[in-house]
Amino acid sequence: MAVYPEKPRDNELMEKSRFQKSRIAGAFLLGMIPCLLFSENESGIEWQKFDAAALAQARVEKKLVFLDVEAVWCHWCHVMEKKTFSEPQVQEALRKNFISTKLDQDSRPDLSRRYEAYGWPALVILDPVTMRERVIGSGFQTKEEFLALLKSGQNPNADIGMTKTSNPPSTGALTADQKRSLLARLRDHYDPKATGWGSGSKFVPWGNIEYCIRLSENGDSAARKMAEDTLSSATRLIDPVWGGLYQYSTDDDWEHPHFEKIMEFEAEVSRAYALAYLARQRPEDLQAAEAIVRHLHDFLRSPEGAYYVSQDADIIPGEHSAEYFSKNDAERRAIGIPRVDRHVYSRENGLAISALVTLYQATGKTAYLDDATTAARWIIANRALEGGGFSHDPSTASTPFLADQVYMGRALLLLHQVTADNEWLARASACADFCMKTFMRESKDGGGFLSGPSLPDNPPPVVDRDENIEVARWLNLMGKTTRESRFNKGAEHAMRYLADSGVVAEIYSFTGGLLLADEEIAGEPVHIAIVGNSKDPAAAALFASAQKYPDSYKVIEWLTTSATDQSEIRFPDNDRSAAYLCSENRCSPPKFSAEELERSFRKTP
Image (cartoon, rainbow, N blue to C red):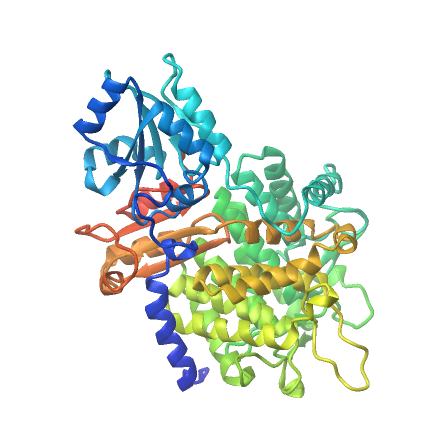
């Protein structure tokens, strides 16, 4: 029986954990924006209560009524207040033609029910005589969109309906021309005949797959087809006997695999399949993810629960093994098993942990989370460095590398997301600080993070493109989760290098990864807050369902009743556990059941 190391008891780390726990409970949703609360006059608009007096004034002045239905905990309501209602043109349009009223949806359950399908803020234009809604806007709107909504509402023949809205304008590091070029490259280098990207060798570029999944969730059917067709074709790289993923196929098709199984490819591709399953619910994607992870468990897992690096392609070194891999399990074992590289590196374990946690999110199977936790505990006990970082292995105990920090840091953040255990977040934060202190290149050199330290008798370290994509995504989500701006600045530092025209020009296979990084830094993740007692099964069910949100860019927080009472947010006083979700440009009404929450992921009014 494997003996797991005891949980470390680092006093400084535990202090960070307690600090994070008390702080984050009060920072979620509202804490993700620069200003926590706005007074009624913050925007310069003369807000009135939505009552008989306001309606009477509107009738006397022959004006329409604008009703802003909001929630005090709603992120996008406050963004609307700060970025749109503060615009002089908006203020003038409202002053001239409308009586402007504001309503907290919790104070009027009848109107909350009436407009909840539109999310918060709901932007309603009413005729004060007939009380007929002329038009209803859904969620945050830019100045231009909101002025168009007001103009539409002034049309006496306006039809009731939800107006189309867009996300807030991007403020990413890439220019508009760069993004257009990258998007064109993503589509132009797709192979519609054989599927996949590029020519010659076929492998699964997981960044492209994840970006296409995100595009498909926003209605891009062409991106959906690229992702689904590639994932379907790539199942031919999965070993039908032992599971696991062969690294790639030659001959410009998926029929000529090279049989080595490498942790980076197995972990990241299984993670891509799990994300695809979360988004599209195709059983074949889940089957593929689980088949790959089965090989990790059966062949690349140490007796202590950490993960090895790879398994050779050849049973006899130098001889192609197509005949060997065509055999069944007994026939293979009678000949022998290809060599496994039994080094235990922090990088490979971080990759494996992220794959396992994502598969746990997709399935709810605790065995995957248990395996991920065991591996994380082993790496912490055997590879942790003073200051929060991780060594590669014992032979490089004093020589950390960027990749070990990135992938272990990402794994620790994911463990926090699925457990709500702030020890994991404290460790992820310490790792991020170590990463920025150790590997951040001076800004005068164009930003970016170095792949390793400068060592005597070695070439100088490089700034690796793919590693910096992962750094940017991880540090940005760290900043969104903790509300610690230094992490966001670290992400922007990585993007400063990635946005260089020379770097952009050379990205092909992982175009999607760069686009993901830029869009995530420019926008907010999906925020899901579970408010309920830690011993309440209903709250636990809501927390489990929150994991199934079909995107990796999300922040999930479980606030107990006591934590909520101490926080800067005042959630409604519900008599049962509830989930609050802010996505895209609006926030949902509270969801009280796991089924209701999951339906909201895939349902729009």
